[in-house]
Amino acid sequence: MGSTGATRSAASGALIGLALGDALGFPTEFKDVASIVAGYGPWRQLPLPEPALVTDDTQMTLALGRALRTASQGGELTAGRLVPAAREEFVAWWRSPDNNRAPGATCLHACELLSDRDLPWTRASRTGSKGCGANMRVAPVGLVPGLTPQQRSGAAQLQSALTHGHPTALAAADLTAYAVRALADGARPGALPALLRAYAREQRTVYREDWLGDLWQHAQDPTATAFVTRGWDDCLGVLDRLDAALAAPDPEADPCLATGAGWIAEEALATGLLCFLLFPDEPLTALRRAACTSGDSDSIACLTGAFAGAHLGPAAWPEEWAARIEYREELLALGELWDA
Image (cartoon, rainbow, N blue to C red; front, side, top):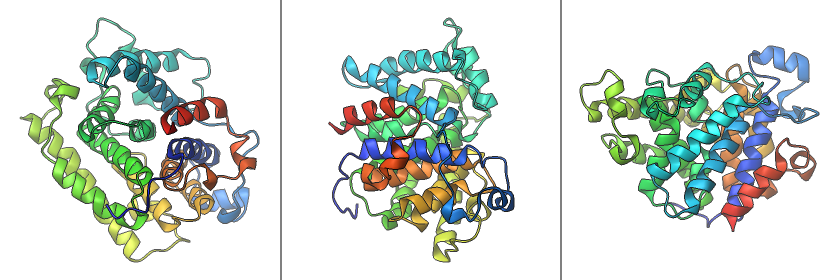
């Protein structure tokens, strides 16, 4: 894998980085780069807001993290254990008065349907949506220790499918969890695009029926294989754009111009990766670049923060920033559990 040795405390680093990126991008989302610079000054000096509040991205990451913790307590992680735990956490988030951070319409609609206990989860899934809402929260699947590659892939796709059932959302979530795990295991950042491309090609025709059940039948594809291949091909296409951007890097340009605005799953993955790979050893610069973008800045930056934190560990983040992040105690509790 071209590794440099596993990252110490990767889970703590990734979760704090994700939340910091989310908080940094919260006020800049929905603004173009010129407006961000006019309001906050040069992008390389973008300040962490006071207070450092997060969005639904971090809230749903924590919901998934709690579900994974619950589902793993009774034995090995399976779909039968993860679905009820995740369903309960996602519905609790949907009902929470703190769910007031401009959450996505797909998540809200799907979670409302999931609250009907008699409805099979595959009927709640929005198979036409590949918004980035399942991608921004999937990092915990890459951080839970001891999973087989099949479990990690299945859990990443299933947690997406509970809300965003489009095959591209499933594939992008799987790739994001794979990238987080690879970095935590010591993969060199420069090797990551090729690793992701090889993984996508390997998975291109694999439908994980033991995790996804009959989900594909709720879409328009003639077969399960046709369904899943559609998603992986979208992701392979955006990896081409990532490679092109890295071949002629321009750190001063808006990353969204190269790999997409990030409102959809595969573009959020690629643009988050681009910001990380432009500055693999300058995590704050990477976060600031991700937050100063014309697209879905908080989601792009939370993915960038997860990648950087998995690569460098908690030492990536200044204590003055990490001490102020909302939900700090819960993020660190999950991180310490998985780092142990």
